[in-house]
Image 1 (cartoon, rainbow, N blue to C red):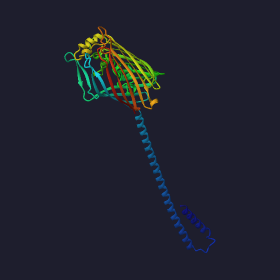
Image 2 (cartoon, rainbow, N blue to C red):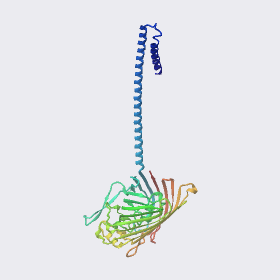
Image 3 (cartoon, rainbow, N blue to C red):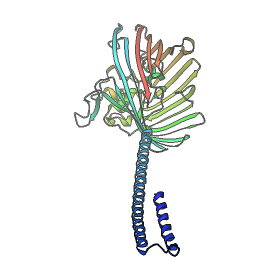
Image 4 (spheres, rainbow, N blue to C red):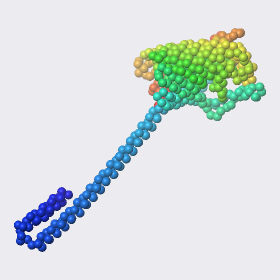
Length: 474
């Protein structure tokens, strides 16, 4: 292009030069001058055309560059949108949580056919004890929810329904298809600060250490502690509302929840069977209070704590006209844990009272469909305790293993309102065992021990158990 401009400049200069030299070179004829001018004009026209072509090409290049810039902007915007969408999806996923734990066991126990039997028979059993899935979602900084579903024993689920119009009122059992599935927790939480939070729905009661330490890696024995199961519902959950929080190293909980139903209180497990999960609907005529305060954290280390439960039970009976007393239930527990270095020490004492236990016993005996038989008598007082001690071998043998010893004791018939309390249900379990962790998420357990009944005519029995458990979170 520069070459063409130079040629044009030379041509123009030539024309000017011709004009100025006309007087100097007069000998040049007019015809030659005309031809020269025509030639220069043709060249100028040609250069103008070339300039127009160049200008057109430059305009096209500018338009192309503009289109390239528009395309690049669109691509950058598309990439930005994708990044934003991916970040939003990641943010939504980060608000979702999933946890699971479970256990499967083999047990070899000596059983008695009935309470009069004094000759035990050994039975070996496998049990897919439980698989639990926990789903959580963090709606906002303060609002969240959690749902916990437990699949138990791979058995068949059954629900009880009270029919008030069938032969003056009877209990009917409905068999559900498939294995037993239990909603153990379904709660919504609002926690504006560490010091205070509110939760409502189907919530865990803070009564007993099993409510806190119920995953396989949180207790040393193969099965959860038998002493607690002989008094209260395992991992006790009810419908209600509660407040909770942490101040310094103190943790507190206080709840108002649905109460128990005394129609299913039994000798061998005191009030545990009164848990209304066996019914299709939960009666709430009698509510209960549950509270707990801990110093330290039982899940992560050393701690001490107490819990308390109080509530009436007769108002939640389906056959409420069979009983006109309160049936007030009171339970208190004290627990402690010492977890330091290789040592793991935990213990709990539980004590409970039940008013009007004789009246409840009589009402249960005469209610159609209940048929408590020999298990109708109820203790007005009950007690239990456990102590477990473990020693970690990790630092000494480079093996992720803990050896332990454990004692469980329960007496659901500690006292009765009238008559004499039988000692047939006063049990002590003593055992030793080992926990092995091939990886942190899996534990393999073995335990062997002795069960003793506080009746001289009942021989001591031996038990052995193997178990495997897992736990993980996403």
